[in-house]
Amino acid sequence: MVDQPPQGQTSTLEYPIVDQVANTPMKVIPLQSISTFHGMVTEDPDSFLFEFDVLCRGYDYTTNPQNLKLFPSTLKGEALRWFMGLGG
Image 1 (cartoon, rainbow, N blue to C red):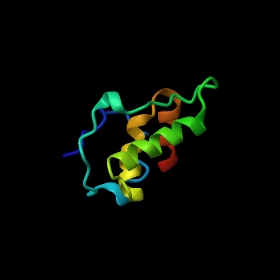
Image 2: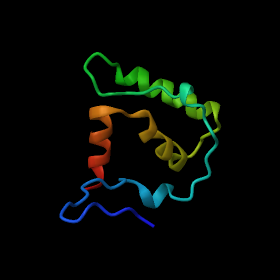
Image 3: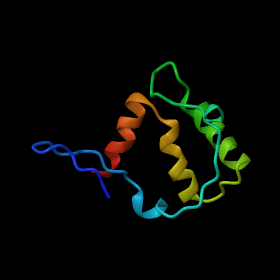
């Protein structure tokens, strides 16, 4: 069952890649192992993506649906808002 927004409010967030990743098998990854990216100018997106790729390979995530299902967990703040806005 999907939670509905309170009456009079509408939800604007939709997971942008649901169809591809809904039934993808995933392994448990300790949260402290997952780097995060906030989208701040002081962060290096290339380094972050390199670390994300290393993490995925370490847990044998070799398919795009697995990577796409894990990816939003690595985003915070503006970066997460940007990603969630891709679906609309």
